[in-house]
Length: 261
Image 1 (cartoon, helix red, strand yellow):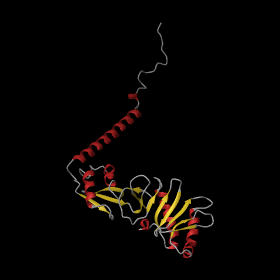
Image 2: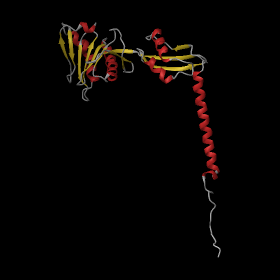
Image 3: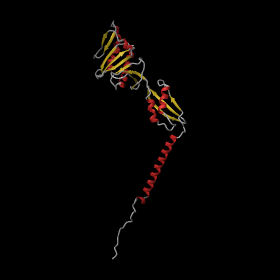
Image 4: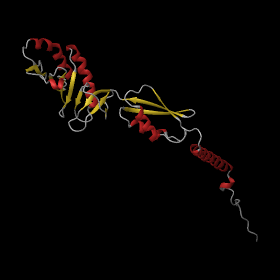
């Protein structure tokens, strides 16, 4: 008697090679991959070809602190090959390591030049921490390594406090202008106590900033009455203590003229 098999499916009908949509997707992926590989190979070959040689470095903007010799030395170190062979991200740090350079940017300039833009630090104070080498503070409150003359005011405080000291310096100098005085030395102790040495050598002890007695309130009290108080004293003033809640104390003596020079 013959055996009848029912619901028998053709073998291999559901395989990958019998799925047109998957075959089309795989073909598209292979094409994309091939195009990417060819593009990469073309760029790599273009970088090695002796065409579009880098002949000129154009410095845009005003550069006052960085010398031409320093820029040329950095360029010889960082820029080599043709116009397309230079990795801008790898070349930029060579210029940012130069003294007085805050940031640098490079841009290709067709057909054979590289454009360099430098942002220089603008120093507002000398940074003299309790421990460590002397540096400078820029207009952003950042500390950087460079040298400058003694005409700048000096900041002395814990590492990492330069930005806060710059903000206080601007605030204090705005108030001191009422009595024709400027900050010569600004000091912040580890206990967060503030001192200001004026340009006439007088030391102003402000103490710590407190909610009930803010530093600005104490300094305003001083600037409002300082001129009149000095006129009543026959001898020179060496220091002023404004940590009192309702007044300030004058200490007589010879100001530190060395610090005020």
